Length: 283
Image (tube, helix red, strand yellow):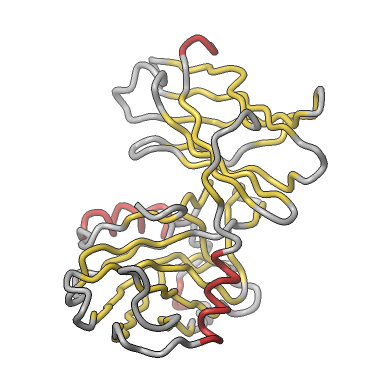
């Protein structure tokens, strides 16, 4: 797996799409037909030819003013971008990286969002490196302002191994790659306490983060079938900022020990991704 990149399944089932759509549609404050839902310009930008067996590209979404979409963990409402590249040709591997989002709080809860012009960096690996790749991307994502609606985009581009470099596209992609968290493994994030109720499969995690004045925010994602809510600030003590993360497991979960949470530390000029394993000793 590429650093900072999430591998994406080459096929997306109709059941999965429906499962993600239900909470989004439930957030509608009125029928979508009663509102003016804008069109979002979507395209694929490519840095150039193949380099070290990989193409650098990005999905560009030009989000209208006052509208937003969601990070890989949307938070209390919304859906993450869901990619389907099954229509591609000569594609062996595909991954998407997620720049650090911003926290958005309204009357319904807290979400992690993107606004304005967004590029989601892509790494595409061909099956046969000396042959072109037809990269066909179908993406399903949430689009929200006063209402939330599902949006879709279909974009295609040809990736040619001998294509010349595109300095403008490369610079644009690099700017968003610089906002993708870098994997780290240090003591900046600590799990201080874990509370989990086996009867309800719900609980919360108390987390502390070292802060020398550069920490802007903390984000988190859980493993498949586990939901980690947006970290809630809980004060400052001994040079560490404290947060509480509500946690919910699958219905039959009786223990959260061994569950790995991925934390993203957003600092003023960089971001880090740190994985922490929950331990029953913290309870």
